[in-house]
Image 1 (cartoon, rainbow, N blue to C red):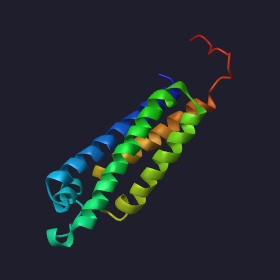
Image 2 (spheres, rainbow, N blue to C red):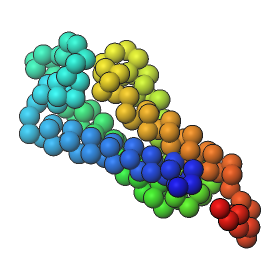
Image 3 (cartoon, rainbow, N blue to C red):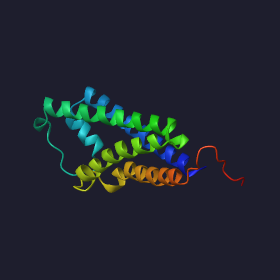
Length: 152
């Protein structure tokens, strides 16, 4: 498999994983309290706010976070499948910008402070880094239009 297609697969996996997390958080938040949602997501993160410390504002913020995860994931998977798979420069820059900004925020606000353990939280950033590496290699090795790749 070529490097750009491997990068596309990693972007698709990142996207599917984040879309699933977004849906999962929305469903959990609709069926229970924000306390239950936070506890289920960050089980090993240490102290979690008590139920009376969470309110409708926190629930709304959690729902917005879940909504953003869902659509960041859909965006990444669609761009990965339609554009990165074809080694598109527009797809490369689109996914690089959106996924990088999403994961840098996660790393800075959740992983580094220790709100999620490295074992739980590393998978998204790992898929992101692999996607960036392989899609960059693929784009750098892109042949000019009309030129065929040598037979192997």
